[in-house]
Picture (cartoon, rainbow, N blue to C red):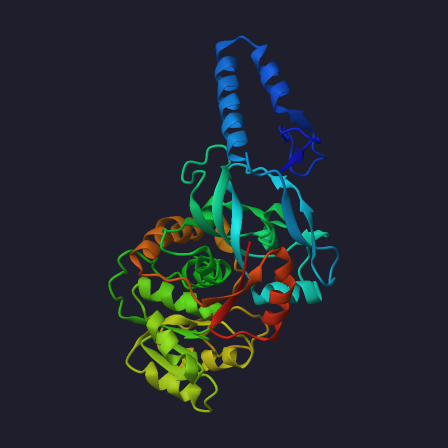
Length: 406
């Protein structure tokens, strides 16, 4: 839904709320005062109760938006167009299981650059991109009780899944789904927090979904050791940084790969052993590391050659012989080895979204048993800085995430 704000010259803005229409239909706007007047004409007790509830919701909604008269976004006008164009965007209205967030920081993911440059995923143009956002709740949808206005939050914006412009992060105000949003403790800045939602969602899909590895869920404090070992290829990547932490908090030993300069980084995240991904002996190194251990599976965060290497490692390991990969196009696996592809938003539709974002993350972030990773690099402030950040990410970034503040 969209909120149209029309400020007459020299007057306070008059807010019009679209009601009773599907988001797919042409909107019909009713003024707040008109709506309340119509409701007040019906004197039945049930109508009076409904009217009071509606009036109260509208008052709360209007009060929470007292400083929200405009929204702006970094628009991509057509497939493969460059650069983003900063222009006004509608002021969105949260629906059931949704919140409206004033973004304070957004992070750039590699997928943002490939979506802009190649247009490989079908979107409804003109549109906005962006998956990772952190900010403050300014409105909640009907029936939402787990979040309130003023909460500091971080969440996964679902533009790729929904194709709705309100669900993109590259704008001042974004709609977030409640089961894909976590409350932030005061000691974590928005710049630090916004680095992980898409990456963590992708890792969580691989680790926990019934269609993938089905590992036991993470807890605070971490689960007791299971005696099983999980391999993460690309531990210093965004997905890898989060996969290591999730698996460790779920009670699994983690073996990973990285460049030597990132060995200590991945160990700080919880990996027990790290191997040089560029070493000609890396396949044998991983096979030897798994001797005497029980495999819980593997996650490839890079794609390409590592897929075949992990297939061979799994084939020679005891326990689960399965590899989940963030990229398609893997070679045919050896007999007995299973391959899974990952789409990083599918957890929104199953138990994993709530289990991670609502049940685990707020407590884990507060306790410090889960940290936002990788480290942020703030490249500027304002929507006009997003294009430059996207271009930089396309050139390659290791063990860091580029962030724009708003």
